[in-house]
Image 1 (cartoon, rainbow, N blue to C red):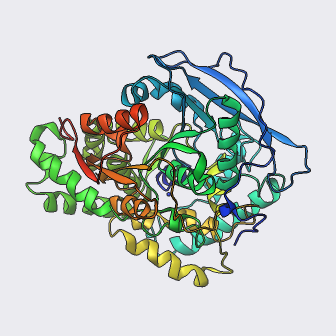
Image 2: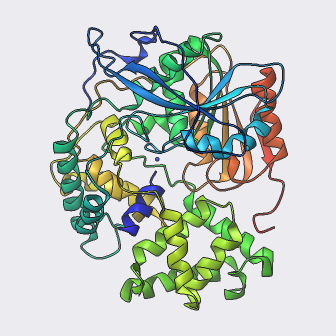
Image 3: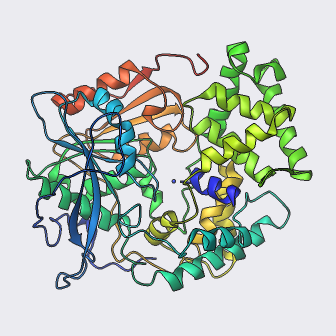
Length: 507
C-alpha cells in the first residue's frame, strides 16, 4: 500500500541489558580481518568498490562463534595526502547505505575535501546485512500492508483504533517470523560493528564518522560507548537521542520544527512568484496554507482513484510533508501539489508518488526491527498508550498525525535489543563533535541539535539557514567550508555559527 510506505518513509526519527554500554570498552571479539574489496553490482559517478566483513552476531555472548557479514562500499580518496577513512550512515533506521554512498560519493568528496576514503555499510537488519524482513515475498508484504494499513491518525474517526489493532498484527507477524534475529539488530550492536570496521581498516584505530538523521543517534551512541576512539564525528540532521531510546517508539520532538518549516516554505513560495507553481493560489502564506488544507479536507471526504493509486487525505498530507523534507527539486514538488489542488493532472500526482515510494516499503520492516527493539516500554492497550500518542499529535498542528503510525507498532513490539545504551550522553571526546542542523528541517529540529550539543563537551552547532532534512538538502559554501576544515584539518568553530545557503529555495 503506497500510503503505508510513504508514511513509514516520513517517520523515518524495556530492553534486557547484557552489559551497560557506558562501560566504554573496546568491542568484544575486537580482532577483525582485513576487508577484501572488489567490484559492485551497481555504479556511481565515481568508481566504487564493495566488500564484506564478518562480525560477531551476538556481542553479549563472547563464547558464541556465529558471525554475520556486513555489506560495505567504498569510494576511494581522490586527493593526496591520504587522511584515513570516513564512515557514513544516511539515516533510517532501516535505510541501506552502500548504494547511497555510490550515488553521493562525488558530492561528499567535494564537501569533505577528497582526502579520505568514503565508506558506508548496510547496518544489521538492512540491505544485504541480515535483512529484517517479516514476509517471504513482495506479494505477501503487499497483501499485509493492504489488510493492516497504518494510516494518518486523524484520517477518520476510527483511524487510531484501527491503527492500534493493525500495528498489533504487524508486531505479531514479525514476532513469529524473526525470532532468530529479533534482539540482534539494535543500535548498540551496530555501534560495535562500526568499531569492528575501524579495526579492520588497519589505519589509526580511530573513527571518523558522518551520521545523518538516525545516523546522528548511531554516531552519538558509538561516541558515548567508545569516546576515546573518536577522531572527527559529524552529527547532521540531529535526532534527540535522549528521547530516542525512551518510551514506546516516541520521539516527541521529532516534528518540533515541522510547522515553522511549512510556514517558511509557503512564505518562500509567495516571495518567489512565478518560480513557485503554488504562488498563484493566494497572496499570502496564511491564505495559501488555508487553501491547501481545505483541499485536503475535500480529499478526506472524497478520495480519488487514479489507476491503482487512491489519493486519500492520509496520502496527500504525507505528500505535503515530503515536499518540505526533501527539497531537491522544490518547484517540481510544488507543481505536484498544485495539481492536487487544481485536479488538472492527477495522473502526474500518482506517478510522482510511485517514484517517491519506489523501493521504500514497510518491509524489510527494518525500521520497526531496529527502532522498536531499541526503545523501552510496551503498552497493554491503546488507552494506556494514549498519553504518549497525544504527545505526538500535539507536537505539530499540521503533521503530528503522521507520527503515531510507528509508535503503535513499537508499543506492542515483541523483541527487545539484547544491548542498548542507557547512559546520559554526557560525553567528552578527544576532538569536539561537529553538529549540523537546518533552520527549517521538519524531521529533526535545530532545538534537538542544540540539546545534543550541550551534552558533548566542546561541541558546536552549525545552523544552516535553509530547508530540508540534513545539510545536503541545499548547497551552502559556508557549511561546506566548515565540514572540509573539520575533516581535513581538525578545525572547528570556536562557537555555534550560522551559515546561509547559496540560493533561495525557489531559485
